[in-house]
Image (cartoon, rainbow, N blue to C red; front, side, top):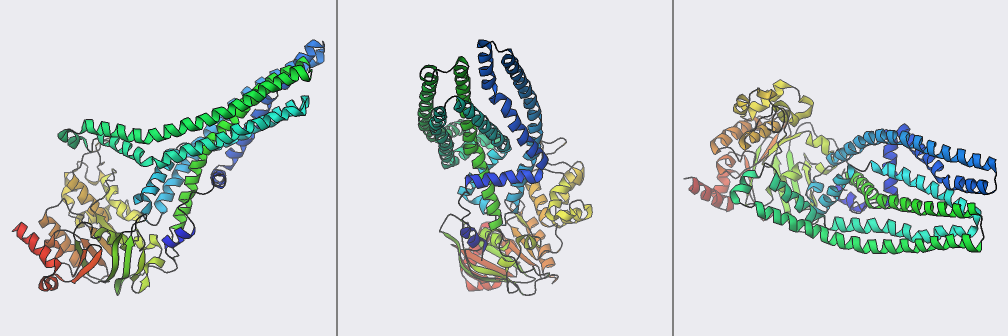
Length: 603
């Protein structure tokens, strides 16, 4: 079963239930900080009791004064003093404790989310629009997800206050318990309201992401020159405003509707509260203490219900939703790991074979690769050519297990690649890409990341730099490989695009003996002569027979492509030609035509 099949079977596209997701996040916090979590919870409950008993002390005080009962007055006075003192003390201790707990659990949650995203076997979650929207919401919420624990504890504390307060009201007359019934609409509206608003936010998340993107383009250095040369600054500002309004307009409308229903629910409770006070004062002929209790406890009941439903609203709208997305990411990461019961071979003797491989990106039905049958022989250099959109980079992604085929299979020496652990396979894959990332670290670490166990192995880094022809880049750096890259860092230096590309190429060459070396347009910023000399060296190394390495080269320069042992021509998602340079020229097909066009352009 492929990872996509497993994902479908587990319905990972759906968010998990809110309560089970919140329970999972609570267990995660307990696993890492059990003592602090339990202590914070207990302290929150203890802090609720003195506050809830204030109405009782006021009743005893009033009745004691009117009946001239000195003992009752002293008891009530002591109770009031103790409640105020204990409330202040517990609040101070709880605040300091919860701050420490939140600081520690925040690190745990942020690291957990980062680890989950890094552990996903494929990169679908980085390219699928609905997943990007979901992850954007999670990234915004993970920094406040630690509040969920405190909000949950506070909710329990408010509920305890409610229970004590209802008990005091019932001690006057059982009918007063009906106040809780009239509070139910406020609870329902508070749990319903944030969910509706959150759905509106996620539905319009693409507009929010566009507004953020346009703001970044308008305010960051990367696009600064082009923004000014093209004069699009005002258009960017106007476009961001439009995108923001497209995001905020539907959300504001949803909030007005939900606020109306929420206000109506509170009006129902307010009417019931006024009726309860009138009932005690007139029909039940309660004592002054009873009336004072219903006034104090009823008012507190209103405040407690407001606080409770407010916390529930926050839990429902932010932290429950955040926990749902976090648990969804956990399930997605687990589901993306295919059944891996075969080891990755130490060397390739036959090569890689694609059998009827087709692929469509998640969320679309359009096949980017369609029915590809292809043999990549061990110890050979294979070039992949074709027009833009022909599927060249997609083929590279499938070979690196960044995606699984939609149909068909990929075999390593006759064994299914889909049944081999993705991490083990990628540990035997090296490569460099046109859309490389600029790791603004020390130069040696920026290169050494290509083989993490040898990150600090200066000789290995130096060798990789030499293989990539990047010695000139390092020689120009003030402190050589010890230079901090990136001008925004202390003592950091600016590096040109071409220099970044050479360092990225060196990073791809860190592994000495990969089974698969992928070079996907990694030298677009280099001149044709430098690129040709570079690949000529690697073609010679690939053909030495050691380990059966396969080198896959994607390039638009036919002067480089022609040296490959095998040239694969893709067109419109299909494989149209396979052969050596001479064979394809003799055939007079699509490759020959493309070669003649480029040769004429350079001639």
